[in-house]
Each structure stands twice: as structure tokens, then as C-alpha cells.
Image (cartoon, rainbow, N blue to C red; front, side):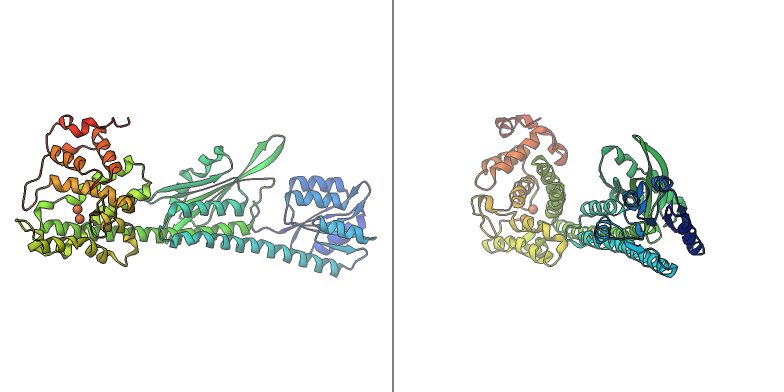
Length: 505
Ligand SMILES: [Fe+2]
Ligand SMILES: [Fe+2]
């Protein structure tokens, strides 16, 4: 590995006195100098050792400077190659520069000019390498935009992170492991790999454990020779830890194959930058999650507060959430939709907070005005969550769980598929639970009554597809109604559950 070692300069000229002259001039500088008057030995050197800068004669018997140039650039893509010749023609100069040479020196030249050309070349190289770091930062700034997006999707963010790392290092595989022992649910593993066989290596947990003990922010680099067909190559593995503050939060693993056992300091810097960006984004993401949980707990508290005001509806939001979640999974909703559904169900009756006790707990029949007051709970609910981005996904649940399929519901009188699917699903399970629950003015009904009531209102109050899915989950046994409602009714004797077609296995 050569991180901060001396600049490697190779000199090739079949005229020995020129070799000696250059050796005397550059020998006093802080370079790692290799000088060859035999071009074939220089080619062997190039084949097994990395170089930063090459000075080569253009014409050397059976060998040429172009041959040296091609061999150097094959394995050292950012090497500086300076050609030396006594008789340059315009054609030769153009063709050699096109092939990637940096400059020409016309013999005889003064040693000051040689030194100045080398310095200029190395500066050019250093700018290119720094530019690589900047590119890495720009790439990653693009990916960090995900952390501020509303869905706060950490998976997408991590995929972009590993893609950036893989691209910047020219690796065959990159993986990231995010871990927090105190928050097991926040563990993540994401990779990007050219071949399946490398995945295990970049997602190896032991790389994370290494930093648990060292606490070092420096990357761990391991390099070993690896036989690939006839030629040898180096298998380079870099593990870059991610620290949030002083807490080890994850590790980025990179696997690359290279001709030389060389990792540039610029590449290590890029990984350091990427891991710092990742650390702050992960910290933000965790804060966002904690905040979401706090909000949700506060709202759950409010929902419970409504239930506490009316002992007859105790557990309503929990049961409705449970029922709706099972039906949504049966309908193959996306995981994110299901997460939103749980939030929506929890909040669907939040507006009841604004309904007076006298109406909420009235034991006799509600008057027309009281019914109207009660129906306001959907709009009140929307007002409560208004302006809280986090709760936006709950809007369709709050707004449309009392709409009817035939358009006779409230608050908007939407009908059919004009009602958001969230509202159509919630309407079924919400009503089902309401029928089964004790109310101030009546006792809860039996399961067979609730099921028959739902079946009877299919197509008028409820979306037939939602009812079908609901009955399917009951029949499949995925939903244990007897346990949920603490009853011992025989479901097989309920006609509506028998007449519909069999649920898929
Ligand atoms: Fe409601
Ligand atoms: Fe409800």
C-alpha cells in the first residue's frame, strides 16, 4: 500500500550518459527514482510496480517511447509521461500527445527545464487527484438530498451511498452495514456488487466488530495477492467506519481488484468524506424516527384519552388498526402503505376530542343536531393534524372513513372509487368493530350479526372488493376474531362466511 510515500519516477533512455545526468539531477530531490538504459528492463518494472511519472526517450533501438507510454498508462491511468527526443516532428508530437503523454522535452535540454516540467506535471496530477475528491463530494451531496425528502427513505439513501463509494473507488463491490445495538430495528445492510460472490465479503459483520475495539476513524485496509487466470492481481479490501459522534454506527466495505497494491490518499479521503456525510444523515434519520415515534405516542395518548372519556369504545383504535392491517397485507399493499395505514387507523377518530361529552356519551338516541355535531369529527380530525407533515399519510383515513360507496356518506359524499382506497378499507373494519362494541345506548352485537350487517351493506355502504378481502382473511384463519373480541361463537355456522368462494391458500 502506498498512501503517503515518495513520488515514483521512472527514467528510460538507451543513452547511458543521459540516464546518469538525470539521476544526478533528480537524485537530490525527494523522489523514489528508478533509471533504466535498457527499455526491456523498464517494461518489466512497469509490469510489476506502480509509477507516478515517467521520463522516456522516444526512439530506443527496437523499442520506442510510445511502447513505454502505452504500458505505463495501462495500469497507472493518471501517470504523467514526458517524452524526450532530439528530432521531434509535428506529426509525432501530436500523435504521442493524443495517446496520453503529458509533454515533450527536446534534447538537449537544460536540467532546470527538466525539473520545471516535472514539477508542473506533478502539480497537474495532484489537481486531478484532488478533483477526484471534489467529485466524490458532489456525488454524495446528490445522494444526501434523500435524507431531507419527506419519505426519509434510508434504504434509497444507503443504496446511493454504496453506489457512490463503488464508483469513486472503481470497486467490484461496496456494502454498508448500519448497526445500533440499542435500536435493533434500525439495523440495515445494503450492497452494490458486480458479482454475487462478493456480497458476503462486503456485508461481513466482523468488519464492524474490528472498530468496536479500536474506536479508530481511520479505515482498515487489507491487500493480498489474488491469482486471476494467468496474471496476478491484488485484492484490496477497505473498511471505512462510520461514527456518529463517538459512537460506532456502521461500516462501509469496499472490495477492489487492482494490478498494483496501491490505494491513493485521495481515495481514502473520499471515503472519509462519504462516511462523514453518511454519519450525519443517519443521525438525522434516527432523530426523524424518534420524533415520529414521539408524535405517534402523543397522538396514541390522545386517542386513548378519547376512549377514556367513553368506556364503551375502549380499544377501538387498536382493534381497528389490527383488522385493517391484516386486510391490507392480504391485499398485498406495499410495506410503506401498511405503515401509513397503522398511523391512519390510530388517528381516524382523533377529531372526537372536540365532541362534547354530552353527545359522545349520550345513552339515548342522538338528535339531528347532535348527529351533525358528531359527524364533524372527521373535519375536526383534519384540523388537528393540519400542518404536521409527518401525519399527512393519515389524511385519507381521517377524511373518508365515513364516506359510503353509494355516495350517501359524509363529509364529502364521495362515491365508488372516488373514495380513497384507505377510506374504503377502514370503513369496513371501523363499522364492523363499532357493531361489536358496546355503545352507551346498546350492547355490542354478536359476530354473526356484525358479519351479516357488513354483507348486507356491501355495494351500498361498503366497497365489495374490501368486504370480499375482509371475509377472506376471516375464513383463512389469519384473523382470530374470537380472540380479538373474546367470544366463543362458531364462525363456521355464519352463513355469509360459507357462501362466498374459498379463500386462497
Ligand atoms: Fe369515525
Ligand atoms: Fe372509528
